[in-house]
Length: 218
View 1 (spheres, rainbow, N blue to C red):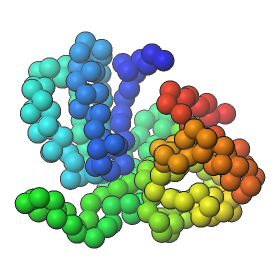
View 2 (cartoon, rainbow, N blue to C red; view 1 turned 120 degrees about the horizontal axis):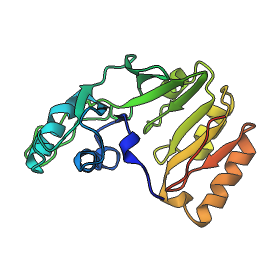
View 3 (cartoon, rainbow, N blue to C red; view 1 turned 180 degrees about the horizontal axis):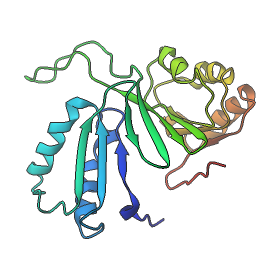
């Protein structure tokens, strides 16, 4: 399915794992390849430890500033901060605890004890959409994210067990659930089992996302 990337105005990065941020430099290069007008504004909001490594990586990929023929803004995110706001939407970041693991060795490099990982709340016109990012086994952060009702919850299903998290969110005020970032056991034949667990625990509509899916918020 062909996408019109020229309409992109912002990207919101939850954390610095490769499967969540690895395609960003390529996207920036793609936007610079005569896809957007010189006055186009594209903003990237990401954990603060990723800002300057991203800019250095663009340099290492030989994507010079004059190749990015549009206004590129890269900002470090702070929890509970409104990171983006225009006439249609307000986006707020919330810490989600995914990266609060113990220190480990990484070759001869100093490894960060704790890194940042965020969920995002999108208030768009009169709708409220929550994107969890990756979640820890502890649902405390998710409970805080869902203290207020949401019209749509976009929730990952890789780092959490469905038999544990589905009963937890079943008690929250959620208009619709979209499961994404699906763990291997829940693909193919496993999807039927996952769907059955959702039907067992949830009283609100749900969908299991696949690559290329588009969802409308009514």
